[in-house]
Length: 321
Ligand code: HEM
Ligand SMILES: *[C@@H]1O[C@H](CO)[C@@H](O)[C@H](O)[C@H]1NC(C)=O
Ligand SMILES: *[C@@H]1O[C@H](CO)[C@@H](O)[C@H](O)[C@H]1NC(C)=O
Image 1 (cartoon, rainbow, N blue to C red):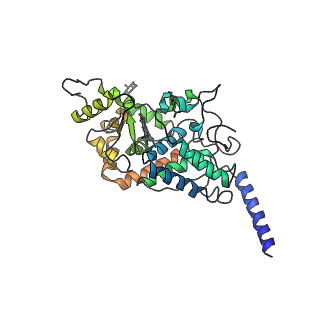
Image 2: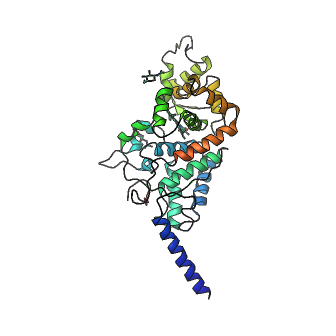
Image 3: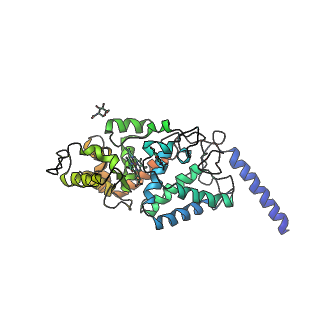
């Protein structure tokens, strides 16, 4: 009796699994419900453990998701290591200081032990970003799953990533190519409420710096001094985007309003009349920022997603199968 019930259950699970594979033309919230029911918890606990040890990794995991989705779609192409005959995305100058790869590897390992060959690296990257945002005090959003991993990762594809020197006209155009409007550009840029940038990314702003008088007429005086001091310590020295760089909040937008944006592309959002009202709104209303961010990042997580047939489930996130 018990045995036959068990057998029926197994059959049902097998059928549903099969169905999930055949019906993979759309992502779904419960994509792995039958095939790997505990993978959500496995990602979450791996991410939380890593963040307890190193809170700066929250920013790293969020940025990884962005760099994945804006290049070749959300297909974990950013995780692939270069080989003898291929220089991968991660070795582009645009990858500057990308981190968090080991966290993804650890989550993948845990999941592979339970359900080998089932959960894609692309889904793990998207879930890790979600968990990092929540851990840092940001909104919690549930994400649909079922992305497949891509087989292409080429250094030249990273031209699609925005440079920190861009003005709003170019940013609006770049984000527009991915289907985002100016408001969504501002919401997504709000990711810079977490983390830091290296001098290499903002030294362009110091071209007018007069080190004798310690001023740059185009920049807030204290800001100019802070940046200049950081850069005397070398291109790699890092400055946080806002004062609460471990906390996901509207501090970034408040910084922009005071002229304390770190990158040219950050401060430009306040300087430009097309985006300034959105910066002001988010600075005053973090519930609005959270809601818009959540919707925009969900949309980002669906960029050019590969479904079954156009991708694979990588066994090792750093190598195509
Ligand atoms: C609007 C266009 C954007 C530009 C020009 C830009 C550029 C940059 C640059 C230059 C850095 C610093 C890299 C370094 O010097 O180490 C950075 C860091 C970061 N970016 Fe962006 N970014 C943009 C949008 C985004 C978006 C949409 C997200 C996520 C949704 C994001 C998430 C992050 C995070 C979290 C960091 C901090 C990383 C860390 O501390 O490890 N950025 N970004
Ligand atoms: C990023 O690219 C640089 C070359 O521009 C390379 O030296 C570095 O190792 C890469 N970083 C990672 C994490 O792969
Ligand atoms: C924005 O940058 C582009 C490319 O550098 C430049 O052609 C354009 O004139 C700039 N627009 C504004 C409004 O500054």
